[in-house]
Image 1: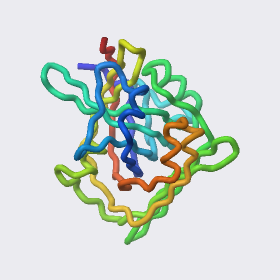
Image 2: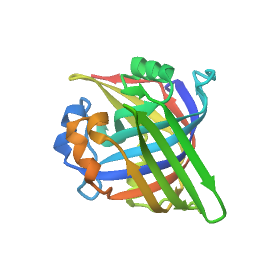
Image 3: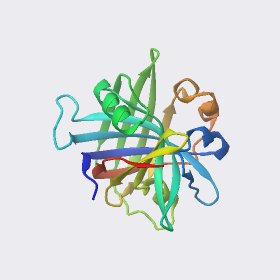
Image 4: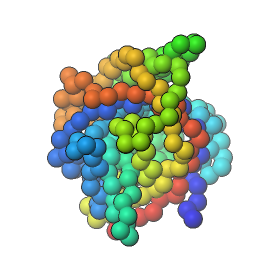
Length: 238
C-alpha cells in the first residue's frame, strides 16, 4: 500500500469542459498513457476549487492549510495488467502560495505556479454563487458559476461522471518515464449550473495551442460538491 502524501478537503469545484483535438495534447501526454474519451470526444477542463484542512505527511503547514486552486487538465488512461486506470494530466496548476509549487514540482514533477488569488461564496436556500479569480500580468481572470443549491447524485454513464471520476494522476517525467499517484475520494454529488462566467487568458497562461478556448463556449459546466481526499506517494512508470 502506498503511503499517503497529502490529505485535504476539495470543496465547491467548478468544472468547465471543452472538446479539443487530441493532437494538441500529444506534447503533454505522459509515457504509456493515451487520451481517455467520452462518446468519442477528448476534453480539457478548466477547474477551480478550494483546498481546506490540508496536511502534507500529516502536518499542517502554516498559511498553507486553506487556499484556492485553478487548473487546466485533460484525461488519460493507462493499461496495467490488462485493466485500464483512468487518470488526469495537469497542463498547469495555479495556487496562491509559492511553497505549494515547490513541493508539488519537486516531488511530483507537476506544473504548479503561484499567482495572487481570491474566492467568493454566496449561499442561500435556492442557489449558490461560487467564484475563483487569479491575477496574471496585472489582469484578473475568473471562473464563476451560479448553481442550484441541492446536490444531486452522479448519473451513471453521464459526462459529469466521466469528468469527475478519474482517480489517478499522471505527470510526464520525460519521454521514457511517467510519475503515477492515486487520488482517493468518494463519488461526488453535483450541482446543476444555471449560469457561469469565464474570463481567462488561455493563450498566455497555457500556450498558443489553447488560444481557441478564449472564444469557445464550453461543452458543459457543472459544480461538484467535493469531499475529503487523499493523494498517495508517486510511483515511477518506465
